[in-house]
Length: 236
Image 1 (cartoon, rainbow, N blue to C red):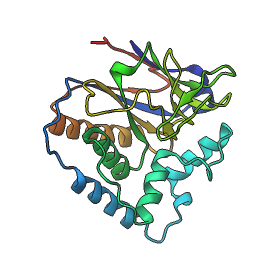
Image 2 (image 1 turned 45 degrees about the horizontal axis):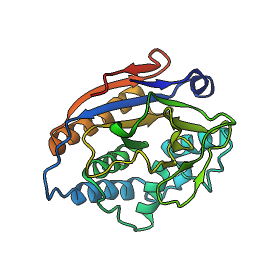
Image 3 (image 1 turned 30 degrees about the vertical axis):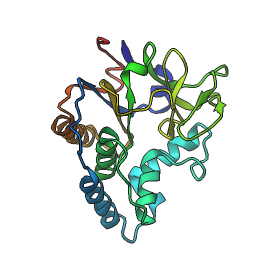
Image 4 (image 1 turned 60 degrees about the vertical axis):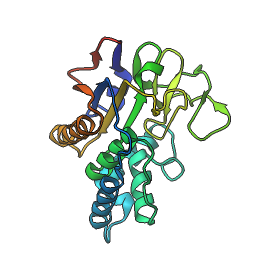
């Protein structure tokens, strides 16, 4: 099984870096509460953005420009990190959902980059970060009743069955979502300039440490970029 960033992504975004963590043997203790970590991350965002226009922040602006480049209006479709930041600044608590989701939301807010995760056992074939073709199958996204096909040219994550996340990190497919039954997962961190490789790896270390601490999972980690465009691993 491979996690691949296709050439057309690097043609459009030559400096993108994708951090990939594969978590195995996830065992989450009962009663784990990560609300404190979420609140601490939100408090840091409130302090960081005091007196700052959200859209002017470099780690938000880069994603708005990326979305605009493939035809997604950034006012209508918010990157996952902008969505979390705006909810925080509106006074909306990011409430606990599942431990893995809570962990990556906290890291996303703490380090101001998009982070997401999928149930590895629900993936069919390879995972690809690519541009959508004009014949993508319809997909039902989280919280939506109907299936809709990605727009040609938009950035998507996909497997052999269809899209697993639309508009890069805007919204995930229901089919591959993390659940209480998830025992293997792939976690993805995404960095565009001005975020550096060092910034990305720092966020990856934080994510890995929290996953090990709270789920006892084993982890394999890598960074994909121009020099390394795919990561191969064994499906268990």
